[in-house]
Image (cartoon, rainbow, N blue to C red):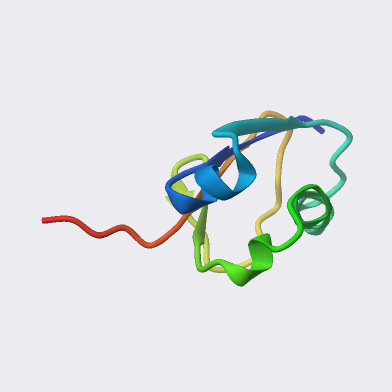
Length: 77
């Protein structure tokens, strides 16, 4: 399956990219492991994950073409 991953804020700085495309993904767990392999240390950051612009609280069932966003805490005023 093909999945696009977006990185925001400090995570974009850490990964040095805003978007990465993954292919051959079998599951959410597979994708998270691949991201961890590509960006060792990302697990030390605090972030929420959104799938197709909806924040998730549990492992989703991914579909081909889904978009995941890794979003650190936001502050503003």
